[in-house]
Image (cartoon, rainbow, N blue to C red):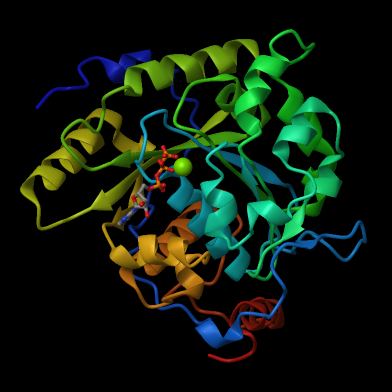
Length: 342
Ligand SMILES: Nc1ncnc2c1ncn2[C@@H]1O[C@H](COP(=O)(O)OP(=O)(O)OP(=O)(O)O)[C@@H](O)[C@H]1O
Ligand SMILES: [Mg+2]
């Protein structure tokens, strides 16, 4: 199988920033937050301007914005954006999920009804609402949302003649960065102006790749776009990595796709792989991250493993399996994650 001949050459050169050496694959984590610990915050509640919102946690001093992008449809972008955000939040991080897709799946996927929204990413991009006025609190503790509505379809046309049209989202998110440890952007299935805005606003890009026959279809185009954005709009843009999604390990084709992807892209492919797991789609249809729907499901556990893997790479170590925790600081961190119980 060689769908991707030559792709790695198209990718921008390695920058020595990945820190893969010695990284041990995270298998399954046992998660300490039972479903009952979900705080009963009413969904869709406006987030006030107050200083109590989004105070950075002690393990990460700088905010990081991750765009989840792949113009191929249905590869798990939204599922990844929602569940990675919720996992970061469960690990004590202040997180903002930004829905940059007019389909609004990330918005409904965290239980926010589009009908109740006063302002969305659309108004923010067009400059008719302040980003802080469009924020809503989700039912997940420490997770806020900048929602999307169908209006966002029109943004591309309306922005076409606007000044700095590719940097609109970046400017809008700038004042929010200090409130959040992580900002996760869910991109639409297209390399349009919305995706370019997300890539320009991001510190890094995470690429979900579905483990199926045409997995790498369109990847060359995505990589070209990333190079262009990096060259012209956002030079510091980093590669968060390629995330293998919907992996069915009993399926030989999926195994071949994984082996081929790892051979071609090496350490760019994240250790964590997301299994095909029906609980992930069920959770979205109930407007909940899987972690708050079925905490022990393989899908929820895999996204928690992904959050751990990324935190480790960012140098913001979260308590993981087999890690010795002795100091008071570690105990406090653990208590915050587990609600004081383990
Ligand atoms: N690991 C998984 N196991 C089972 N189903 C999954 C998994 N990941 C995603 N799905 C389901 O696959 C479908 C597509 O997923 P998702 O919406 O996350 O993809 P997407 O890339 O955001 O799609 P789009 O390109 O339309 O925005 C959804 O029905 C989702 O519930
Ligand atoms: Mg989506």
